[in-house]
Length: 176
Image 1 (spheres, rainbow, N blue to C red):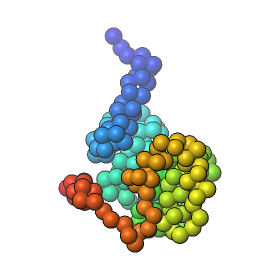
Image 2: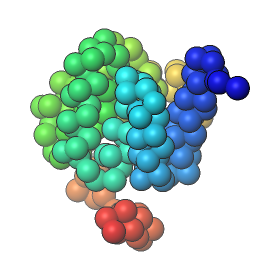
Image 3: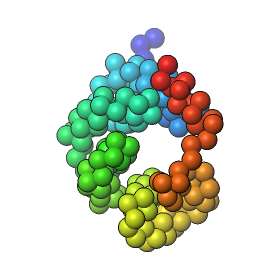
């Protein structure tokens, strides 16, 4: 029996969710990229797969490749917030502060989400600028998630940043 378009769409949606889960929950960006590549073979214009792949490339420290993909996503969907958020994080990680600031602003202009709001708060804090209004917005989105972020990921002072032993190990394993 030949699959219908509806069943193919359902299969792709399931694969997208698996790729998202693999990257975000299991913390395996390389496997998520492989899943996204399979999705993109079936549907080259699948925005979610492209975004997940771009995020996975960044997490795999393939920043240049990620930024090229992000720019293609922005060209195709200029009003979507997430590609600008990913671009902001890419530039921020490379200490391109002005580009990071421009991209995070474009992201929140399109749609405020927990992710881009907390990222903007973090960037402003690190840059020594007022960030409390953005942190308040993050709490309004999800107080529990904000508290978790503050406990595990917030950096209040880059000069006193300490990288844990396990973070060092994970980074070394990703570079292999």
